[in-house]
Length: 309
Image (cartoon, rainbow, N blue to C red; front, side):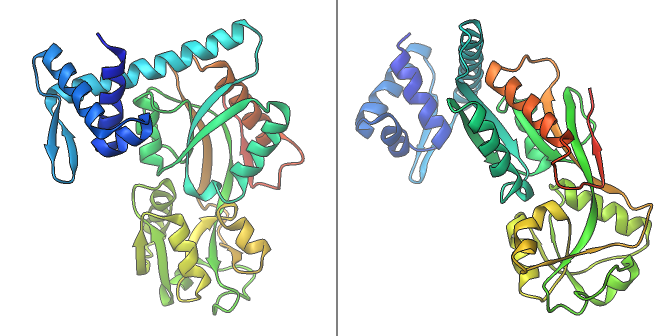
């Protein structure tokens, strides 16, 4: 079977567009169409449905695309194993991460890791906790950094840390000068929170439910950036661990206020993998680095660090 045809089909399936697939493989769209038609002839089945706004996989196409995705991941894993055999420190790490860590924490960690291993590259996808779990189960990711991930086999938590949830407001918000707040006091103010696909929202909902408090919602969104942007405007508070707003807090754009409750559930930032898959050498090295960084005395003060086996 012609590998070129498989490659062109895979790109079309991944992008949902013949034109975008052609741009990625640097050929004319007509060449991609011809190769896919040849592949359909070999299988004796239609693989794509051509539509005015792109292409859609047929049931047969979905089967082939899934197999090709697994094949690509297997080839990357083999490449990592070969690099390991040759004693090389190059390779690629595919990482899915919650949005709250990408403004400051993750770039800093990657910078430090890059100083030791300059030839290891990264593909970083920003996703909700639910999507991170899906990516690990579907073998799309080597490592996931999630928040309060659901206890779901075959996900393994290799390490991480914990932080308290705090009230996040603008410096001119009525609550900004408070040294601490209790949850019942939030009832008089409007909230901006991520939707329920985010681990942080599920934590917040459990906390509020346990304290018989319902938020007065202004905004629900699928973006942590949007929640913090609304908080910066001073028209709503949000509830987050401090790491999610560290840069804005340091710049004086937001204020983190502790919640006065010693029994409050914390946010657990977790380094996750698929327990039945061996990580490529580069990904295993990075996971070890993440765990070490979480334990390091130089790490900014956390409420409670955790490292799991």
